[in-house]
Length: 255
Image 1 (spheres, helix red, strand yellow):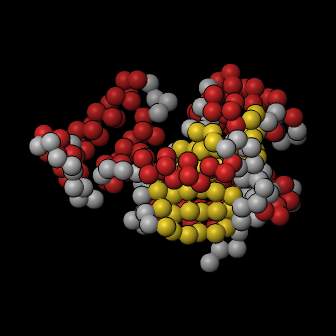
Image 2 (cartoon, one colour; image 1 turned 120 degrees about the horizontal axis):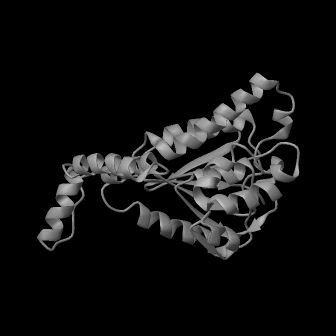
């Protein structure tokens, strides 16, 4: 079905694996288009979680310069728009999206990690916005990274272009967990199982609201969250959760 990625399902979890190891999973237009299509398909399924992984020794080296170099201004704009659509789709679909990171995640590859809801990294992983030491600055990759790690750390990452190791990425807030390489799959599965429990409808609404209120002034954020939380109180899952608590029993989720 896909040329540049693999897609599989195990129970409630869909795994999307970038499969261009010979190109370090670099993101050509065709690769981006397939990723976007795959996330849209997974987003309309009844799955509760999506794992984004990479085949080969590198998670993703970012944009494919072989593709970029042959494009004019309009062509590069179209490529970056496609990439942005992918990142925003990952955050807008109802499922919990978790990055399974091994090896390097650089430039738009680092952007992918920052755009996922959660991220677990192997100890061997590294992260960089290398445009700072090259000729094409990482303008768009910096957008979600900035929202994960804060201003001064973003500036260091973007201006130096240096690779930070997994432990630093954890300290800076770019990933949620760092584990030995041979424990990566177990750690991804454990975090995802805990992040997807409970009412599916409640979780979906919660994810959308979290992204809607992030980075807004506090008053605006409260205005958004208040109305959504009030509406969410009427969901069957919310009613069942409250009833189960009051009746001191395990909930039976209707969704």
